[in-house]
Image 1 (cartoon, rainbow, N blue to C red):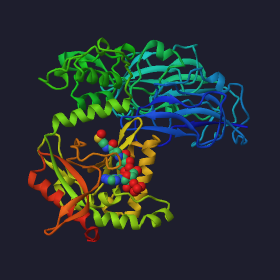
Image 2: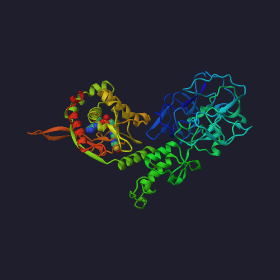
Image 3: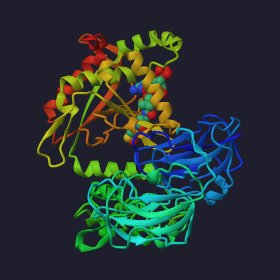
Image 4: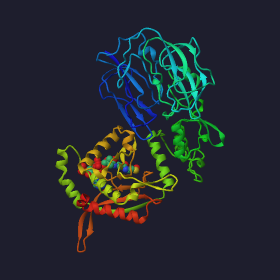
Length: 553
Ligand code: CAO
């Protein structure tokens, strides 16, 4: 038997993805690939599969925690023999409090091996002295010691906060790398320290090499914050490792506690943080607070001036006055999609151009290839052809493959053609991005359409798989409708809406012919694209889809 720890895998650079659902509990037997928990970031929700089979000894996180790559999730007892030393007295069960640890804390129990990490190689047993130093704090500048959380003689558990440091950008707690006893404090409150400076002399229970900064990210790297709070700092169950809590002045010179990611979100949404009530400890503003503020503003419950000056508010109606109602909280993804739509709608002057493509020949060809598609284990819908046609039109009409800089001064032309595909999922709209569409074959695109749509519906998309799009296709073809005007997925400047193809009579000069027509609606950002550009783009699409041999050129 061996105890092993499973950590958050590469989630495409997402920081502070929130645990929205735990799928296992202590005592559960789990299989390889079995879902452990569901994480939700700004862009996606994703199920994190187990990389081990065995029995769950401990779940180290809880719903609401915000995790990044490398954060420990569960401790699993596996059948395999442990390569590390025999189990010492202090097991994971005693070293870690019940209820798990919050985001930012890396649980480093010596006898629990992170799955991806190398096996420990210590002899263990003998007490030793450790000098805990200032870890990588993401800056060469000195930072202040603003709080000493322990004193000589204190017993500390691994992960307990020893001191709190503060720079002009963030504050961070320095965790104890090991359980032990404080022998001496090597700094005073108010001292200025740099990376590597000694902070605390500890007597550790065991003689092992110690990675002092093992607990967490540097404040510079951390995008989510954990409070610097006495109770939090002292309690191993909730102590953050290297966490940041920038307290910066916002408008009106109000001191606002919020992490960098929260500030970024607030900037993007045009929210004045000083007007947001923080629900975190010490009234720290969380992402949810900003999102809630925007939601309330959009529904008329908060001062709209904060998100869109001069907009009249939509009144809050008590629908229960008219009959039975049920109020269901929206998912985070749902609310973010709403905020993004609103942002695009408010910022981008939209125009939509409509046309029909005659896909009679395309459909005949596509249907003739269905058997071959099946043999290849894929599905050939109109989507791969639409992607290919759009890629050609994007190459030939580079303004559609551009974005406008935030100051409106320049256009950024992209020399790659990555196209997003809107996917309708039970939890909301997701837009995975197919990369280098112009360089892929129809079969390759067909495979990717199937794979990405499936991943989206199973909530397995990584944030990286939804980034970098130049243009989006939103196909409601399998659902129905004659046409719709999609909202541009900013900072992209164009989006193609595709409705249901239907056989219609088309006059050929002598008689009506039954032709399969595919309704297209191209919405574009009129700050960047002129009607003429859009007309040319749309006409080229219609021509390409009308005769797909042209896609060969
Ligand atoms: N006209 C008629 N039939 C169409 C069609 C169209 N425009 N587009 C697809 N179909 C057919 C397909 O050919 C397929 O039938 P066959 O198996 O007989 O060939 C069937 O409809 C189902 O296709 P599909 O939807 O499974 O696959 P797709 O590649 O066409 O689309 C995807 C994939 C992920 C884009 C789609 O499933 C989806 O989720 N669409 C919704 C997008 C959305 O929500 N947009 C709104 C965003 S704004 O709120």
